[in-house]
Length: 450
Image (cartoon, rainbow, N blue to C red; front, side, top):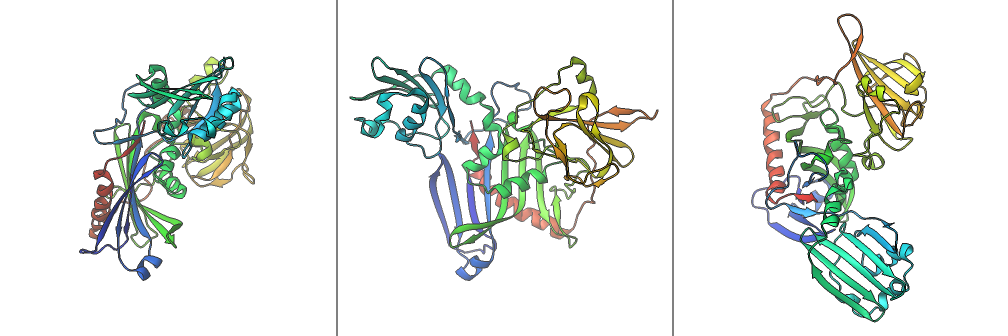
């Protein structure tokens, strides 16, 4: 769900409410008319509400559930996957027609019937396709008959028979196996899957990730289900997005934790604060791997080293494609850089003379990074690899603290705050304005991927 309004809406302005379909979802647009000259130079404030239901095959504890009135959506396609014996399963792509789908699936099936797609009698009366829904094709070369199981929803399914002489459509009970696949598909946990469905600019998504880098592990936690409401600036030119601006306010609920961030400039450059004025900046990030479209697809993947004793190191493995950027989780200095046994290529950073962070199995190191180099939190220090004892590309991350005896002991990263809080009247006035904007989206219900 997405709404748009002018930056300086005034009481009494004429309002226009538009409702339209977007990639199978719902997009509400709320516009205020503030004058052409003003709108041309000032950014608009847009608000959006979206989320994802939990991946069904995982444990139930701490999950964020869809609520009454949420609009369920599954807008994600994928390549046709052969199942053997003339059978193919796939998901419907955005804006795909039956003719498009027949052509794509037929790359695997090689059915003479599907080749005649546009000319098949009755093809125009087939049920509408919803992006991201499952379809299964079964072909029989002898009879030139192709059967299609189309899962439009958990309680809506069709058996479609395609023949050169025409098509037959029969509504039937949903296939439990396909329903389970739809709900257990880890792709829906990708933040980009949800934000693409409502048209959220990628630059805004990456700002969202950076704001909560110290609170949320976007590689691991989203499969438990989440809800997000966000207000942000967008600059338009000739009716089209020219460039996104800054995230102004966001509420993120994951694992039943409610997190908020509000932008406020106190004259010293500005930053993000909670509704009580606590600064959002943390000493340590939650994840050492840069979050991007490339890495977001690895949300549920996890690789373990070959030796069973490796788990005694109490580290975390972050799977990602080889070459993905590895980031320092906090300011520090390079204590070690180079190959080291089962760790493979390793970087060790020291922080505040009391913490160490390990980044292992790297494919390579950041240019110019040497022993003693100073690094900033979020700075690239290397690339994901699979050197040393590793069964797949990932970075092994460990956090250690110096004990009273001087030994280094693995512990969870601390939740310390770097910057002071704010408690000025102007800050709380800004928070009240942002809350009103977020409530516009929340009241219209969330778009939830299911």
